[in-house]
Image (cartoon, rainbow, N blue to C red):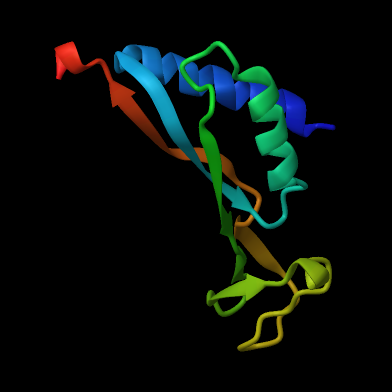
Length: 122
């Protein structure tokens, strides 16, 4: 259920950006979403389709690019990937140290908006 307010926030940002670019249509919105986010892509598209009618974003598609969870070892400094299933027990694959700093995997950001501009202003 938390996807609805997040989708509304993304929608607001996309529509504002489209307006600033004199867009007549938004075709695609590209998101980067970390694997550690509790985020269901199909639900986001469903909410998007629910809130976008009558707007410049009506009919647009949400594309989600998944970002792996990665950490930097607190002992040897190597960066390594953490599986979702072992996030609480992850150890450095090089030295076995149990403590690292998460550097990716929980993000949620808009990385692209495909628009169509007003032909008279191109």
